[in-house]
Length: 119
Image (cartoon, rainbow, N blue to C red; front, side, top):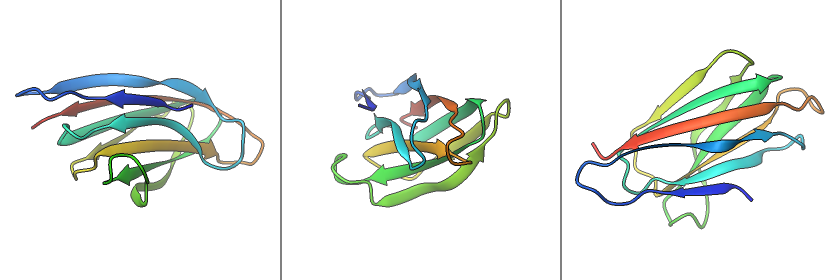
């Protein structure tokens, strides 16, 4: 099951964490983790593929994490050794990161770190 990370209200909240590295095992999108980002106005993600080329997307929820109908960051490539960063400033109650291999049956590992702030 994907890790769910919760943030908590604070006058000036800053948070950073990481999802567990995920080795893909299927050729369709798999959930890496879900971030309850309700209190973070600015959200930063940092991705590194430690093995093989991967495709990543970020989905958003406005209903408390029940559904993820919004593509916040469309599919983008993450290649080994080339860090990719994404910043999100639009409100979403939850953000879900998904990954799949670029080439079918050529599985890889994705490392994901994130940080958020209430300003």
